[in-house]
Amino acid sequence: MAKVEAIQAGCVEALMVNHKGEIAECTGDNIFVIKQGIVKTPPTDAGILEGVTRNTVLELARKAKLPVQEITMTRHDVYTADEVFLTGTAAEIIPVVKCDGRPIGAGKPGPITKLLRERFQQLIRE
Image (cartoon, rainbow, N blue to C red; front, side, top):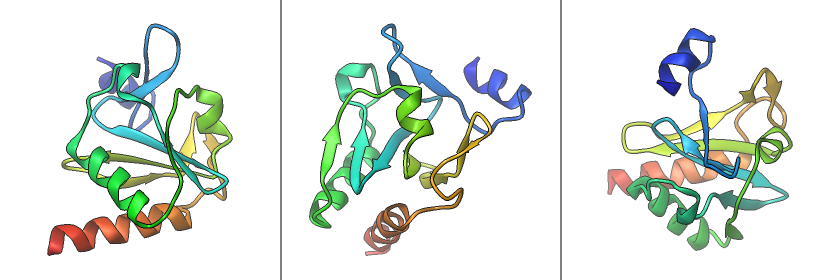
C-alpha cells in the first residue's frame, strides 16, 4: 500500500517508519544515510528485513575502512544527510538525491555511494 501511495504522490519510493516513528526501511529496500563520512543504517531491531545486499554493503564499507553505525534514525537524518542510498536484491545500490522534494547533499550521487556501488558491482562480477 505504501508503494502504491508513493507512486500516486509522484514518488519512486516511500520511507517506512516503525511504531516509534523511527525510519526502518523503504517499501522494498534497505536505507543507508551517510553523514560526515559515517555510513549509517537502521538496526535490525528497528523492524527491518535484514537483507543480503544490506549485509554485503555493510561488509564492503568496513573493508573500505569506512566507519559504520547501525543506529536509529528519523526523517531529519535523511533530510540533513550528505548522501543517501537504498539497497535491495534487484535494485543493488540506488542513490537517492531528494526526499520530500528536498535535495540530499549536493542533489547528486555522492562519493561514498559511488565507491560502494563500484565495489558491489565488482564483487558480483567476480
